[in-house]
Amino acid sequence: MEKIPEHIAHFLSHQGFIIVSTVDERGYPHNSCKGIVKLDVKGEIYLMDLYKAKTYENLKQNASISITAVDEHKFIGWCLKGRAKEIKKDKLELSLQKAWDEKITSRITHRVIKNVRGEKGHPKHPEIMLPKPEYMIIMEVQKIVNLAP
Figure 1 (tube, rainbow, N blue to C red):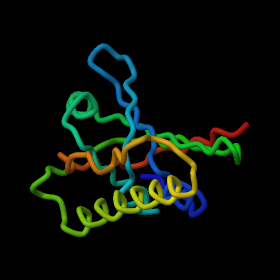
Figure 2 (figure 1 turned 180 degrees about the vertical axis):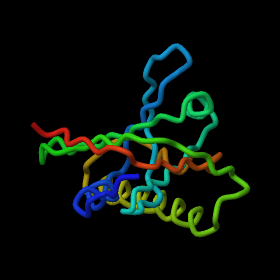
Figure 3 (figure 1 turned 180 degrees about the horizontal axis):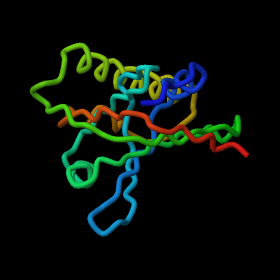
């Protein structure tokens, strides 16, 4: 497991979402958006998955995973590569479920504030319609790649 430097941990924890990549049964990459619930600088990242769909199926066959986050304005970004483990819905700690709920509430609040300011985005609040997570992915980081030139 590779430790996550503080500046990268800070950057990741302030992302609204990250891109998760897995590999399907034919070897093709699959990308999806996920939210980070918790980050341990010792090398673990906790991600909630709202659906047991393609990411879930891919990880059942191949635990290889990467997450990518970028800030176009600051021209920085990282890709973290590693292995995934599943925590089933009924085994989720209450504190992690609460952290997820707080993250969604924060996203809704930011969207409302932007809409009040006239920074119109999505006409509805899609976060309100999201289902409860189906399971959690724990990623053990094995390699960190700086995406800046």
